[in-house]
Length: 115
Length: 113
Image (cartoon, rainbow over the protein chains, first blue to last red):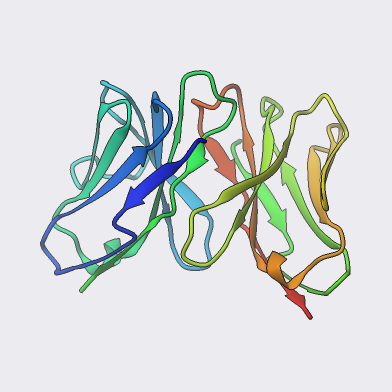
């Protein structure tokens, strides 16, 4: 149980375009989802926290208009990188928890390359 | 403060040896301390976690030692295997799983055959 699926695993997009990353909880209802960003050989940095049906809470320094997060259902959250630029190239990882779990579980990550 | 400091940044261990990774935290409100294992191109996976009411927790070859007064905790990997080669992250959290995790900087472990 507690499987979190992220799609796509890799994506290449052109500078100026938008790309959407999906995070699904396959066998539980995710009341809270987290989006992280990880640069090569670095740690995970929390970008935002979203609760189902509510607006996401963004960490300081994260542009909410650039990184659009939607958590419209209990099994799906999406991160849309709008007007992507090469500096947005990174590894994006989601995690999700249900209302009673003691742990949030991570997806397998999405490698975004903006060319 | 929210910082969690992790050391060493990289570690090389011979097969069969003990790998030890250390973390220190500042915020005494943290009450949950997990360790994650991450392979290249994959998301982190929970290895083992501890709460401050115990000083040690063991699961198989993995042991967490926790020193509340020193605000330090460590991961010991016994009988290290080449398949353990990965990046390990300690983390800390205050309250329930709906709250954010604060990660350490990571340790890249290489276990030589």
